[in-house]
Amino acid sequence: MWKIGIVGTGYWSEKHIKAWQFVADAEITGICDRQEDTLNEKAEQFNIPATFRYSDVTVMLDNANLDVIDIITPPETHLELVKMAAAAGKHIMCQKPFARSIEEAEEMVRIAEEAGVRLMVTENWRWLEPFQLIKQLLEESTVGQLNTIRYIHTDYYSPRFAPEEKVPQPFLETCHNCCSMRWVCIGLTPGGSCLVSLNVYMPRPERLVNIRWGRQRYGHAGIQGLCRSHGYELGDPS
Image 1 (cartoon, rainbow, N blue to C red):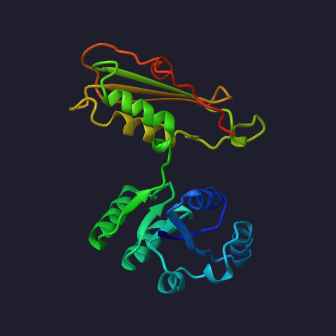
Image 2 (image 1 turned 180 degrees about the vertical axis):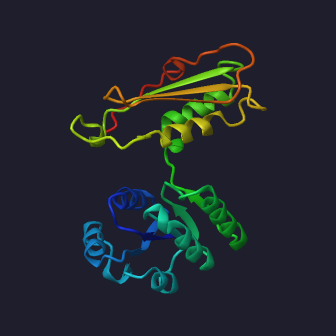
């Protein structure tokens, strides 16, 4: 049984807590936030006992029975929290954005390696069934040698895309897409010979993103309908 410590009880913590409570081999044995009203509200919502609640990370690391620290706080806090968790010998999951700079990201990786603990960015789309299936079919060479992969994603669910909402500039809501497609394509074309084109369409016309990476060498091959041709249909996300 993995013992989980939650750091941060803001908006995204609800998603994490629900997921941890769904995992049979995991148990939340610590939850921490400096804002005690938010801490208690979230703990009460998910029936986390008062004895597992902390307003100081150091106290939780010293006293709670923990294997993993799940950091769900803003990026400016990540480096210090990773240092503390690693020094306590805890494995670490860290919410994205991972760091404020490449230097901070590299330092966190170094800290975890030197402490002998695992460090993972909480990027979850690669574990979703559609991406798992696509990766499996590609690794099995179901469609042969690929030279170009085009991934098109439409996003209509977020209230941040409502017409009346202001759009931060630049607005890049594609971290899931970039991460999952990079993971799907790892090892397919040694030397970077496959061109990957990522298109993300959102409800408002100014929210079209087109990202490409890799090098194209041999022409074009498509994988449209790959999942459907193998009898797979996406289910109702609800």
